[in-house]
Amino acid sequence: MTLRLTDEEHEALRERASLEGISMQEAARRAVREYVASHDRRDRIDAAAALVMRRHGEALQRLGE
Image (cartoon, helix red, strand yellow):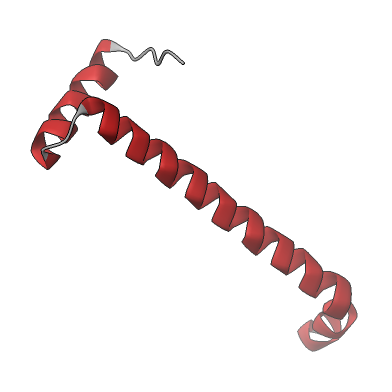
C-alpha cells in the first residue's frame, strides 16, 4: 500500500510523530488502528441499539407517550 498525503498532511504527520518520538510510519499505523477500533465500536453500539429496538421497541414507544 502506498499512502499519498498532501504537503500539509505530510508536514502535520511529521511534526506529530516527532513530538511523540516515533516514526511517521508508526504514527500512521496508530491512526489506522484507532480509526478501525472507533468504527468497530460504533458498529457494535448500532447493532445493540437495533436489537433493543427489535425486542423492546413497543414498550419504549409506550414509555415515550
